[in-house]
Length: 251
Image 1 (spheres, rainbow, N blue to C red):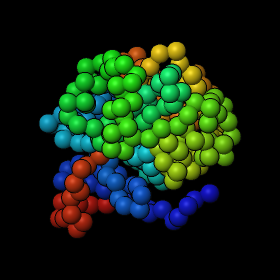
Image 2 (image 1 turned 90 degrees about the vertical axis):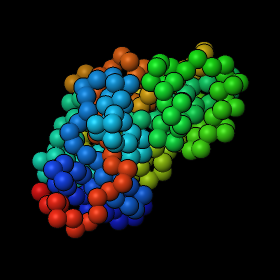
Image 3 (image 1 turned 60 degrees about the horizontal axis):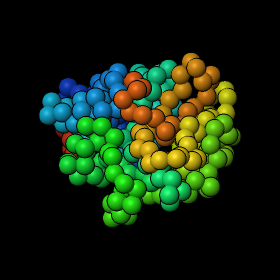
Image 4 (image 1 turned 45 degrees about the horizontal axis):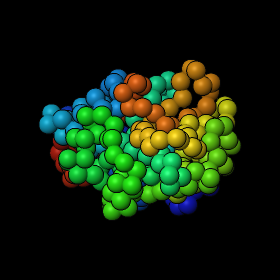
């Protein structure tokens, strides 16, 4: 069930760029075409943040809002987003850290991290002792956590997905509801593709998709090694063009 009335998604051309305005926490979030990829998490992230593109990395929450808008808008570029989700993968730039000693999962949106930490991530998975990592996470803006025992993994109903504590910590309460509604657009129940235990600290990345191997269902991924899968992403505009610019036109 929706928590509020969402703003209408908009497809628009601004200064020669195709952009999608979607509702994110009551404000417009602007994604910009073309897609970056196909590539692994690191390479696609570098494409998005390159000086040529100059875009921001979307979190799982922001990617969920893009997916929700796409599955509720039947226009050319929103349909391209649907196609990527149904047949490929969208990277979501939220790190998922599984920690065995504390028996918890921590989530960090890369956009909240400093340049040095992003560089560390893009060079490979961080290799820190768990005690040092927990200390860093507890002092990181925007970090969230959930206990291993508090969530269901694997196949579940859309209602279970929307209430799942992992999904809520991963993407936010409102965005969990959006993902649940997106999953209802598929024929089969969704899958939460995550871990509920580890023997050593694991840092994984996030993705949203389906793919032929999973059948006609939504997959929310949070236990993926970023160098081994290939997907796509749209970066978002950090500062929007002003509404009514003479270079803007609706599509």
